[in-house]
Length: 454
Image (tube, rainbow, N blue to C red):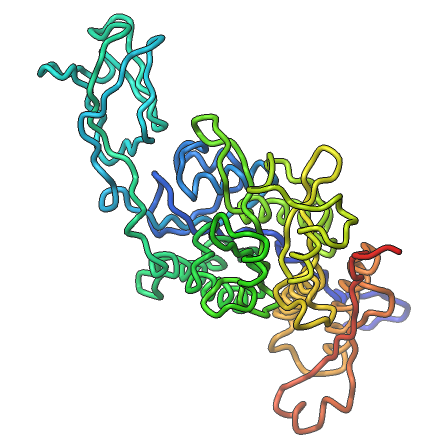
């Protein structure tokens, strides 16, 4: 070392590092679509990305789900798994009679274009040419081309293929671990493929199947996520509540990660008529928007539903503050529902399926969500310290890194003052430290929602 007489400075990087919060609101959706890759994990970052799965009005569970999700949250990230194969599960419609009125006619069913072309004939042996005499849409609208051979008022016969989901079973949605993986089992590839994991699972309508609901719950445990489950259409308020304690029903669980919801909700279908849709289609979109825009520590309850026209059947009661109203009875059974506030319908319900069996704070949806996000974020942040020398400087850096993140969440209102991560020498014996194992404790609380105001 060269001789030096004086003062000098060396810059050494601090051991404390910022914590990157994991994506809080990615939706994992398993569904049936008329188009798109089959049993492949696909990321949709916007509504424009959903075009690959077919027209948003196409009357299938998957396309309808994406339509409702993006109506509630235009910025949603959705990991999509399509389990439907139109080549093997479609129905041929032969000689459906139509009459051209105002240059077009509506078929009785939507059309699977990739399963076979629409064939239009006049019933007397003349077969018309697509693109010359007529065009058609996936929604089953046949339009004549003015320069073609079909005229206004002509009576025609149409052969085409439409979807058939009667053969689908719970096992198709649950999937297999493979290889290749299918159904819900595909989400184990999400982190390696896209660098993110689903935090909200949905399988609208089919989550009413007990086997599907059980698989969704298992996925939630693995990913530290939550899932929204339905029961069947037309279930009354009494039946929904009864299903909470009936073996074999999707509602029959006490998991903090399962969110039972009902009843179904009305929106317009591809023919412009009101139709009943599973409430989970709408609710997962609201949950995504709330976590992304307002913060995952804020309850998804009492948020406006943009896509709901009305519930499946009238919700009885004099208003949201009527203690005997349907929505109150559903909430009391741990079922998230809807309530009319002014001219809109709002989500209503703070609790998971753990309630009322458990009244611990984590039965609140938002509190379980905070616990998951904080835990996952801190665990990922600690990877950089793995295999570093286990000395006091490393211990201080770990604690400083964790508490920097905790302080940020306190400032945002996600955690309460006094929350911290600390090192307790009693947890770290000489034997444990010699084995390369260091332990920290996390004591924290997040605010409960103001569920009742007196």
